Image (cartoon, rainbow, N blue to C red; front, top):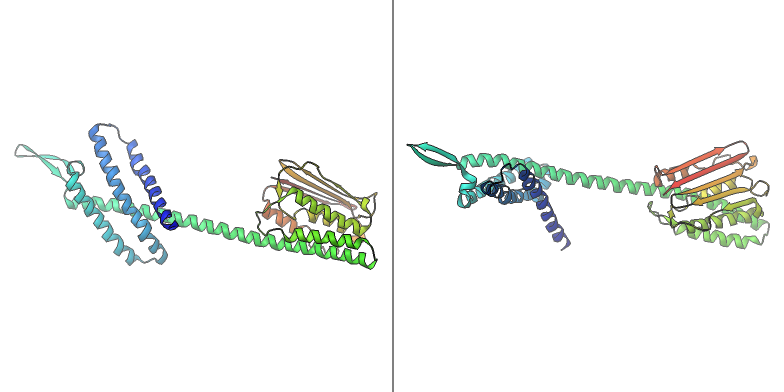
Length: 353
């Protein structure tokens, strides 16, 4: 039922466009709008315009698509020729029966001193009809090629989106696994020291993992700013437990948050990087995390002092995957600045909504 309704809507939309082009544009060319001229115009471009549209619609629906699918010239000729011939014959019969003076009349000549009216013969009308029929067939091909181009463009866009989602999901999985390994190592260290904080660390890690698992793989999904900040606070809490120095981290974020959303799990790698390579157990050299957010943009600034023995010799995942995710999720709408100096490390991320 939906398909029938769709076809009916398509039919009337195409007819409206056809009449707008054929009937409307030709109306502009009329110089003298006399009653006779307008009558001739309405018959030629109105009534016979609808007949021409019906022929074009038959081409569009049942003739051209099979040809484009199978590229069978014999089949299309065997279909087009009878349709074109039949339409010309039908229009001639209608013209000769009802609109002889309007359509077929072509002037007069003087024979033996008398005016004799002249009318188009069937052969003349047929030749003229062949030319108009070819134009109609070309219009049908043009429309079908246009529809195929739109469908192919849509298909390419869907495939590109699926590829981006798969790539983004893969990069996010790498980052998450990297974070998980580091967190488990921290809890393992606490357990070896019989620290009572291991229970709190376990619960915090459970909350973090729950948030990570619940994020959809859709590249277009955005999480609320408040949820992402709670996730970052839990991450910082876990690191404070690991280092045993709560003053080693300074986390500043606005109390009033705008009603905006951000791609999930995109900010935490910058903070994780600061803890991994920086000093986080000395209050005089804390890890500083500043998050600013308004209706125009989000700004994340992370600064840490570098500890030589904590540098990752293999480089790990690093920020390369984060850069790739930013290019996928916020192309042309972000700015990332990273400064790796001898004793300090800065990262500054700006995301424009």
